[in-house]
Image (cartoon, rainbow, N blue to C red; front, side):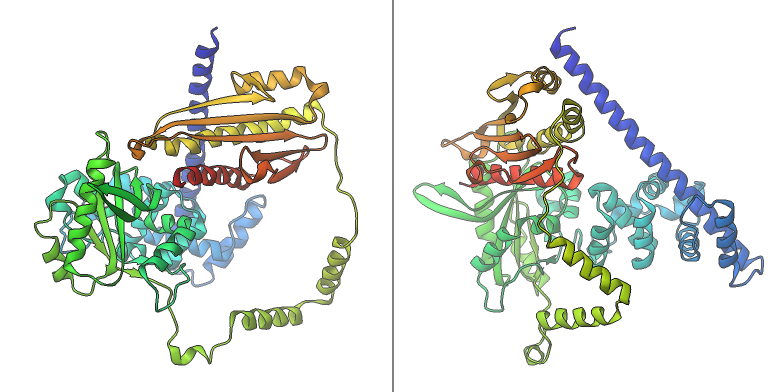
Length: 539
């Protein structure tokens, strides 16, 4: 069988296996949620119609633990969550025509401000409930009180893959009150389907409380702070946004103009121009942003991209003034407010303790509450950490290397390629190659076989993944290429990671051969590579 055909078949099989594994996880989760719903239904009926009283849950918890000692999750607290789960979705197990009516809402009226989540068919809504873990449901049951808002956060969790903590943060930040609330002219400037998607993409207000800027800030201060916290800003922007650059230069005739922030949104398939204003909205802001959008459409946007959208971030005390200013503008524009950190009134600042004082007080109180055994153990840990001992190192063997290659290096390389695909919309082509020292290898399988053959000389070898991004699309005439090369040095006792032409090619992470890369470490290494690529693009 030809290597190319085999590689294609292998890729197809991998995708099928990943799909089956994903389906298996969802199936297990579905069964867990169904039995929890049944338990919740039973406890609710026993207490309300059976006259069992308030001790029903405690008794049921004890009996279930005796019957299923190997299973967790049957504490009284957990059973109360199950009862709330049933009460939140009383028709969860079986779909009936009446349910579809109760959950269906006609096309959203802009004046009502209601989320479009309840416009979906009842079957889809019920499937959404299946798709998030029980721990996420507990957060939603604790923090969200209406069915409409609960389904909103379930859908957003499914779409964005939020962790439990991130879900809690989005609920605390009242995302359902802000999503889709930007003032805009999309109905008159975009097609119906793109208009609805664009409306749901932008928020009002944006929460920028992660910025450390004072009351006397200038627009440059806000912009600089946003760039320093670009990952948090992307998180606040939401799904699909990719950062292109700040103060992006556009030339019109012989004049230079600079866009505050330029992003690309993959869901909308278009560039997004953000303009920052520290004061109140003024009608002339819309005209200037309209000019920038025209310039991007004519100089940067390709034929495959949709029309550029502009977003003004400024204070918007008078919605009528904003709507008058956008009326008649032919380019799609949204206007949103933004909120900075919740500052204390000036008269109270001097009376409040500092962070350092609070931390010291907490440390002292925590120390007082420790048991004698805990204090002794803390002293022992401190004493052991100060001992000058060598790490327990195991010399490399082919079996150890095979294990590291299969469980760490191969998943890392595959993750790197997936992450780099995020940049392919900006380049004409992306190619990649594998190397052992300076020898080019055709595939990861060939690389593994090559290392196995040369196991006697493995120490001090270097294996590499070179990713070549050819011709940056938005650059216009002065185009350029970008290269990222991830190297793995095989030492006698450890393997380490570095990037060519980054940080003097120093190894920035080492692992013993008895240690595998953790998922968060794979993400960390890929983040470093992506940051290095963005440095090349921005420079």
